[in-house]
Length: 439
Ligand code: ADP
Ligand code: MG
Image (cartoon, rainbow, N blue to C red; front, side, top):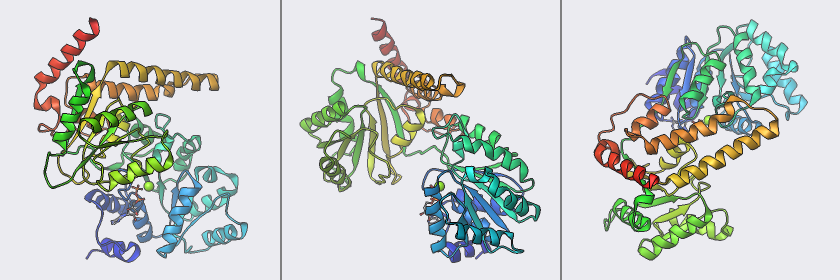
């Protein structure tokens, strides 16, 4: 067994790496000669990519994370594993803080991981400690977790993260590890620039999932959209096979959740609604019945799905458009977690598109009025939405569109989308939709 695998077992209790990407990232960080950029979905085990190297390296790893709550979680977890990890933050009792600083100032500190918020890194009180660690060559790595917070194009921008560029410049020779969940290419480029990553080694879980079949149906062209949905759901659920599957239909409004669930049930597939307008008890019941395979279809607003990890989701339908291509990828990606063939379908309607477009623009002007000025990045939600619309309206491979959006190379779709299956059908549908809109 290699030293890395042994350390994985002794410190963390894991027999193997979660994925090849995790193993490769850990090894690249350990080598220590390059900056490393880790892009993997939530839950993929990104923390280990710096925690394990931190334990094997001599010196201390400085970990930047945006929230004290997140930091406390991580530190508690590491303490439980007997890993010397601490955090310095504004909530820390002063005795404990003195103790940590004393350790850091000692000749050979015991601490391996020091967690800290970006505000704290920039605070004057921390500077002497930081300079001294750096001057004595005691910093092994700088790890920036939730690195998308540095991007004004991202969904969770934090101005304090911009200070990390300066920090980076001060820590000459300390390799940087930036970590974030799968992010649009625009956000990735921002992170590389802001954190001054020098030709980083990038480790990413490919976004392409070959078991997901994507297609788009123009809803307004259908004589009866509900009957169409029913036929699709029946086929995706596999008729009468013993293997039980289930599905999710996402709608934008509570009313459409109710309507679609009612129609599907009436037509023969039991479906339950899930939205914020339901009594808590009813909502929980919808979810538990669906989780327990008692009802095959849940018709929900996007509030449903966070943390839901069900293996046998055979289809995810978007009855209404998602607000961005990134959200669409995440929501549709709840299908086929077991690796079996599954379908992701959008019932597209230009009316929907115009409504959402209007809402997004309204939200942007509201923000600008409140601030009293405009910024280029205000347009981010609109650009992300336009990528969603292009996905539906363009003639091209759906998988390729998603991969490109996330900066991945073009995948080998091999018929896993409607366009690659039969481009003529996609073109014909677009032509019929165009004819309808000019009527
Ligand atoms: P992320 O930051 O990518 O969302 P985390 O680092 O929080 O993910 O890890 C998610 C979970 O996966 C944690 O409970 C962690 O202990 C676990 N985990 C990480 N690596 C492995 C592994 N090699 N084997 C098993 N579990 C792992
Ligand atoms: Mg994480």
